[in-house]
Image (cartoon, rainbow, N blue to C red):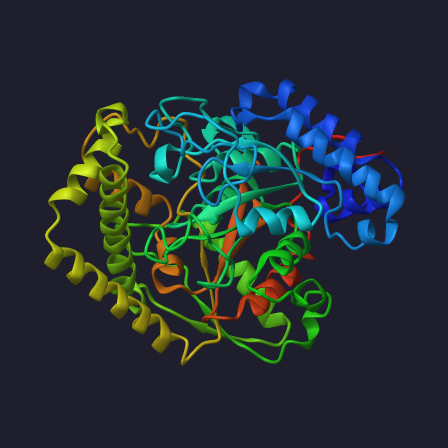
Amino acid sequence: MSSPSFADATELAGAIKAGKLACVDAMEAALAACAEQDKLGAITYLNPEAGLATAQALDQEASVHPERFSERAFAGVPTVAKDLGGPFPGLPVTAGSRLFTRNGNGADSDLAGRFRDAGLCAFGLSTSPEFGFSLASEPAIGPICRNPLDPRRTAGGSSGGAAAAVAAGIVAIAHATDAGGSIRVPAACCGLVGLKPTRGAVPAGPSFGNHLGGIASELAVTRSVRDTARIFDVVRGRTRGPFADIIQSPAKTSKLRVGLLTDTGQHYTTEPDRADAVEAAARLLKEQGHELMPLRWEDVESAVKASARAFGDIISVNIAGLIDDLELDMRAAETMTQAFIKRGRTMPATALWSSLNRAVKASRILWELFDTVDVIVMPMLASAPPLIGSFPTDHSDTELHLERMTSFAPLASLANISGFPAITLPFGEDAEGLPLPVQIMAPMGEDNLLLQLASLLEAEQRWQHRFPIAGFPT
């Protein structure tokens, strides 16, 4: 982990603490990278003054209070917030929509405060699709976010800008949110690590709150499992934990019953190379002494379908309520967003209640499955990241749009609807050099177990980052 190509936020912070570069140097390098890679479309809004001011304050702290500075997990590391989710001061969010303007300085949140406490310096907002309603980050207001590994392809959504920025090395770590796979899908598209934490583990207030009925979580996309563990330590709940230390000793994990699921049904078929990567990851765990227990599509099919339906209904009612509460003119929104608003406004309460009941049953199905296995290793994506334009929002067929997203990431919304934690990381590459992602899911509260297993898989070094981090000292 010493080459710039493989560096992560932890290593960048270590270089800053060692005096190899100042916080301001790191910030200026990130800003220069933004300008150089403007066509990538990863960043939708910049506030260089705010980023530089934070970096300068940290450089001052390093001089006057070095002990306090050294305790910050990511001291001086530049980052970007997502244009959707818990707000960061100085970075006014529009959720990728013309319905909002970037007036004012942006609000603050508990999560943003914890990012600052960690020493992270936020200087911009990453691109998100309008209200996060897509697995591609191509809002009509622009910019179109492209995958740095293949600019013809999507970087995923809805945290696509965050993933593109991290994979391209503009920043080493970036804030992200996940309501239906929106951390994990972009991470999988771009060869990164993405954890959707256990429901309630990361604060979502005071203004973001229970905005999507509990299905949304916030954290980050990163270049390493240790970065994910450390940012989770910093932001989770009211207490800080030892997760970053836990992953240092994955061998201490007792023998696990590892559920292996590669079959995603005839309707959502996972391509062979991606299924093979999942099997390879499971075999590695078996070699470590864990027991493999094959699972069938039939074991999760009803839960997958119920989760997909609940996701669509929840976001429809949510956006309808938001637009009505704020008395906004929905005609300024994208055609697809307007269709979701109309769907939410006309949905009978009985239909929503039925959908939520099915979601509860989906959670129960997974709980019963976790009576027989301790974790499940499964595909994250059914195919390679599709070409730009594969998730158009200039039509009003919400069912078609939701089906396209489910076909691309059939098992993504399971973790959101159930509240269970799930992590993705790359485990090899395909013939075109694109990442082969693996997803691992565990019961509620077992985020530490996911981090341990992901660290074990990462140690195989089957994936290499293609771009160095901006400003990383050589």
